[in-house]
Image 1 (cartoon, rainbow, N blue to C red):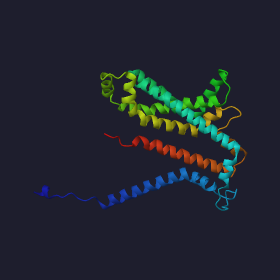
Image 2: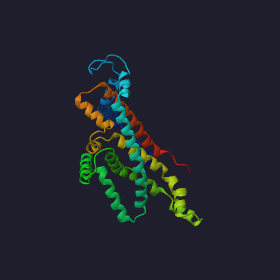
Image 3: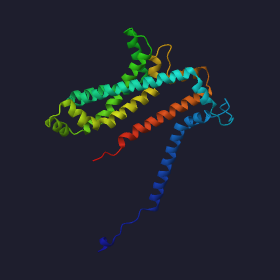
Image 4: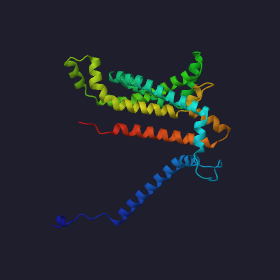
Length: 277
């Protein structure tokens, strides 16, 4: 029969050509976007190793700007403040956020959806609005701006990120195993720590690392809530740049970028580890 003899025709050469052109254009577009995003950062990293203070002339490779960076008491103090605030805020936000996620997960559908919507607001809100709001709240309650207000502010905007990291793991937990542990004589608390908590560990770690990264990288909220006499790395860089860019700031910015990049890579790849059956 004629219909049975009809063979599937191979794709037209023009179709294959346009497909190749589309892929090439897509690759070029992606390359241009990445170039615009990371070329300034790469330039900054290269300049941090430049012997010359001039940005227009390469004077040779040097590490003296990094040596000068770590010889400055002001920078070391700002680094200490930054790391301490980031660690404390991430730890507190992880504890509070994990407990909040467990509480929200146990609610009925309507209140759970309302709580999740309220949780998303701080992340969608502009940082400058959050910073000014927190500053006005501290001033209204007579709280002096300083280390404590920065810590409270960082905990405040980090909690939603922890909740969103832990909540998917809670939805994946097996409630039957939790109930079976109670049937075998375990108290609710012991059943939670033995059965539920191990499944939440990846989400908790992801939330902690994300909170630490967000705190480490924050400038706007810190700027409005820090008061006088205390600086973090971000606010110190801002104040130094206003007086003129010095090469040691390139070195400091390069270190911050690499640290944040490593933490973000860990945060992104940690939840993707295959689960053991």
